[in-house]
Length: 307
Image (cartoon, rainbow, N blue to C red; front, side, top):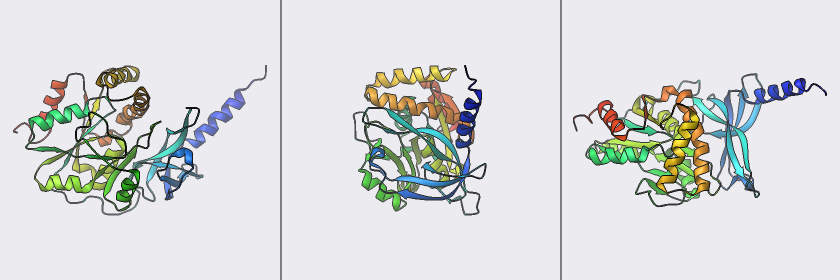
């Protein structure tokens, strides 16, 4: 039997060569992507990798800039007619561009961010805070292209993909993410005007967010404008954490099994993000005891202990 180790070595090297970090040389928006990718425009970047080679690839995140550092990750690209899930190597933003430009804007307050995978309890925690400290906190609506469903209760502002893209092009939406789904185009974002209106009213904006939206907010307003809490499901291993999330997603009865599969796949990346981007979090909380989580937030969010 022929020794295939050289073949394996070459395959591993080829894969390693592809999975390098790099910097954005240029980027554009592909307005009319091939039909299998859906109707939404796709950001495409020319990326210079660490070894000096260049690749064209899909960009993930928002507020792209030339010179910005990006790193590769596997993501769901599309689902074909046979229901096979096709993945691609895409590049997500890691840090600001290595150029000088004014980053921090003056702002009258800060943003309270609750970040974590679907099913971890972000919305529940937010609603308890809003009910207990309603005079001080206001939830920021999430702009989305996904279809409305029971349980939203004012959490989302729904619009068409075209409306979303128009607002994004005008700069009204300042943090954007695309959540892979086998059934529909799902874009999410935050509008600067919603956050600034809450500040103007003298209240604290609360965002229920995920990793790319959190990065977008930090890029736009500056990291110091965000008091960031990461919410983790119980468990010492990723498998246990995902098991808890699966139970919660099925128990709440808001999603189909197809949607739950999508959410669990995205949750794996969310859990890894807590370790990879510790710089974006002030505190990490395990949501096993809801009362304890609320008590901790009350202690660590300025003003809530006196409210």
